[in-house]
Length: 393
Image (cartoon, rainbow, N blue to C red; front, top):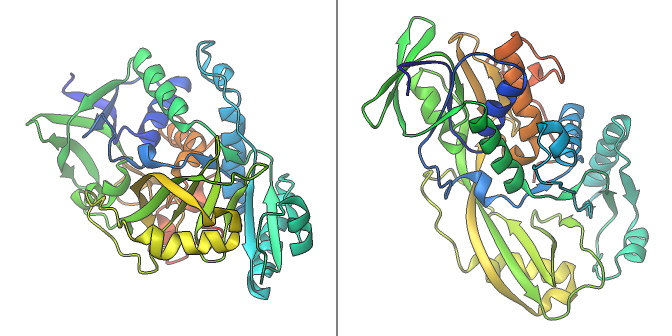
C-alpha cells in the first residue's frame, strides 16, 4: 500500500474493474487503487445480474454503447491482448417488446427508427407475424412487437468481469478490501479518503463506482446524487412442457419479462408496482410475489408455462437513477477531481465496456476520444434537462 494514488476507484465490481483495466490499456502510467468493501461481491448488482445485452433503446447513444459492448464481448482475447481470455459468444435470441396500445406501438416504431439509423436491424412485427414465428404466445390485445437478434441476448458477464480484474491486477492495479468512511476536502477537490481500517489514502482523482452506495459516497463530498437501491426479483423455473424453440427475452406490457435459460429452464424478472428505495443491504425476497403477480401474467402470455416449478429465486438491486434512469458519468462540475459512474438503472453490465473506456479516456486524455458521453454528464441534473430513455425495463 502507498500513502497516495494517482487514481482511486471506489467500488471494484463491473464498473470499477472495467475502468481500472481500461486505464492500463490506454497507457496510464500512474498508480491506481480500487477500494472494494466486499471482494466476494455477494451483494453487488454485477453478481445478481441476468447478464443480457440489447440494442433496443430509444436514445442513439445508448444503442451505440451496446453496439461497442457486443463487439468487445465477442473479441475478448484480441481486445485484452490475452489469448487465454475466454472466447465468448452472445446467444442472440434477442429481445421481443410487445405493445398492447396504439401509443406504445408508436413508441416501438420511433425506437426502431433510431435503432435502424444506428445500424441495428430491428424488425417490427404484427401479432400475426409474431404468432407465425413463436406460436406459443397468447397475443390477445397485442398490436405490435419489435425484435432484434444482432448483438442482443445472453452473454457471460461474469467471465468478462473476472478477466478485467485479473488483467488489471497483472498490470499493477492494487485492489484493497476496505470501506470508504469519509472524504477529506480542500476547496474544490478531494484530497484524500478515510477508510474503515483506519487508513488514510491521498488521491489525485477519485472515481465513484460504488453502485447502490454511490449516493453515500457523493454525499461525503457534498454532492447530491439521485441514485437509490431498488429491489428487482428474479426467478428461474423449469417448464413441464418446454418450448420447441428459443424464447426471446419477452417484455410483456405488464413490465414482467421472461427469457430462455437453456435445458428446459427459463428466467423471469420484474418488480412490484409500488417500487420504493430500499436499504442497500435489504435483499428480502417476497416469496408470494411470484405466485400472486408474476406467474399469472407470464402463464397468460405463454400458456405452456401454466405448469412450472421454480428452482431458484433471488433479489438484486438496481442503482436506480430517479432523475431519468440513464447513466451519470464524468467529472463533477464543481468538485473537479471527483468523477461519477452511477445510476445505470439495470443497464450497467451491458454498458460496462464502453463506460470503463470512457472514464479511462477522461482520466488519461482529459476528454472522450471514442464515444462522446458528455450528454450523460452531471450537468444535466443541474440544468434539469433529463434524457428521456423510453426503453427502460
